[in-house]
Length: 117
Image (tube, rainbow, N blue to C red):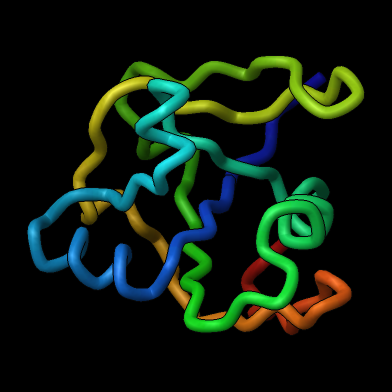
C-alpha cells in the first residue's frame, strides 16, 4: 500500500510559535514522552482530533510532505492496527509545507483548511 505524500501534526499555537522562533519543529508532550513525533494522515486526522483535541482552541495544524523528510519516518501500527506516520529525530521548522490555526469543538469536529487532502 502506498503511503500519502503529506502528513499532519497538531500542536498548540504557543508551542508551534515557540518552535518556529527557534527554528525547530514542535513536539507535544506525548512526542517527547514516546520518543518520536506523532503525525496523522489526512484519513486519520479527524479521529486524532476527536480523540486527543476535542474542545481545544488555539491549535495549529501543520502539513509536511513526506518526500521532504530526512531519514527517520516509520509507519507503525497504532489504533486498531492502522499504520501511523511516526518520525524519529529532530526536524527543522523549514519542513512545514503549510500551517493553519484550527479550533476543535467539544464533539471533536474542526473546520480543516482546503489543503488537507
